[in-house]
Image (cartoon, rainbow, N blue to C red; front, side, top):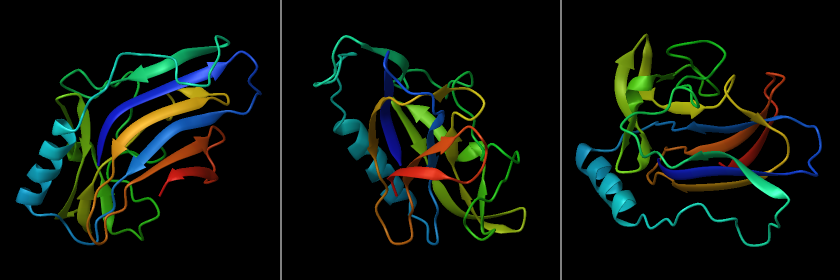
Length: 178
């Protein structure tokens, strides 16, 4: 999965329900070859054409930008993101029957994109190493407008997803893409 930009706008008229911004997972029953991974990265970089921060069409001046990450640094901003499932630390297995280990080594940032990879690799008794990033404990937002530009993985068994989670820590979610 390649994510090019995540922006959140909130209105001064928002209600008080708190949500976790975004949770991204790649789940691999099979893995891509290194050539396929390189082709996906090149395609994501080549098709990127993003303008500067502009208020999205249809939003009036009561909306203001509260979160913006265009992944322009060399690493993921640890002040904004964590690279595990949030409630368990390294090598956490979430909703995948204990077969995938989510670890920060599957996350990389370059050319204005964050790359979340999945690899067939034995680690801590699990058959796959995958990546996950989220804003748990970093940012929570009240209702808002989310502008997320991402290239989802293609291939059998790959599961790229973007979710909103609530601050309560239970498993209730709103699926943006799954």
